Length: 339
Image 1 (tube, one colour):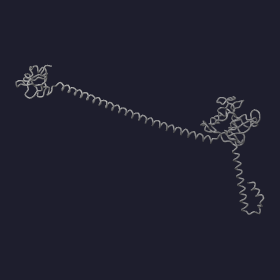
Image 2 (cartoon, one colour; image 1 turned 180 degrees about the vertical axis):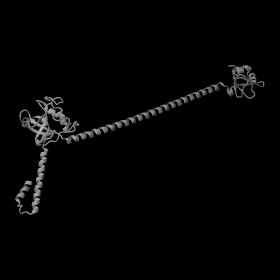
Image 3 (cartoon, one colour; image 1 turned 45 degrees about the vertical axis):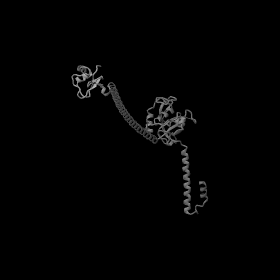
Image 4 (tube, helix red, strand yellow; image 1 turned 30 degrees about the vertical axis):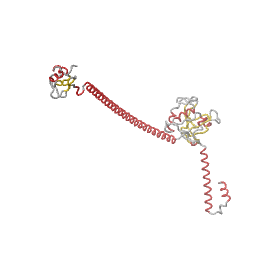
């Protein structure tokens, strides 16, 4: 579309066109061109991968701190396949150092060269990874190091050299200048800072959650203890009520038994008494003779006249009825025959 528009502009006689047409037409062409350039820039930006993910809490708070740590490893020996902390190969060294930033790099220099985002040599900065051919110049990547300082494409990097172990080297050294391949930016202080903040927030949330859970557990424990005490109190109350009820039933049973026994005794007493208070009397020459075994005292009775009517002595009546003297009362039943 822009080509067609430009063709139309070229075809149009701009010298004879009105001024407002010239201005608007060139403005339209300029806008289309700007959009095209922006699209191309975005397309090129898409070709670069993003920074490597920080998957663990960074131990070091910046790239500079990581580089300071890497310098403490200088003179540690080179050993193929080693990732430290006492010996390293080149990719094992970069793997170990970036672990301090919470980043897990791939294990080989070839795979590491595909991580992070591509950086031009003139824009290198500390912390970027730089990649080189192996011992022979070719297409394959065989060595990697970490930029310590850089200026206009010339840089110093720290790496695990197979000859001297961990050391710093300048890119101006012909061996490395001839073998330089590319550079990748793995992370930035901004990303590290953001990750630290996220981990701090996560830890804060976790601590808050743990505190809430502990508080909830304490609350539930108190409630459980309260319920237990209430249950024990109810059980004690029920036990006392049961004892009270059992005692009441026992008393009722005892009273019923006593009443039953009393009734039985009364029945027996009634059965042993003759009719008319168990007193059988017969008249003999105007004197009422007592013929039954018992006699109920009536008004005017004395032990003497009762003994005469019963045909026994006063002492007999006293003995049979456990009497201490001669005193008797109306309505009293006394035995008048020998048991």
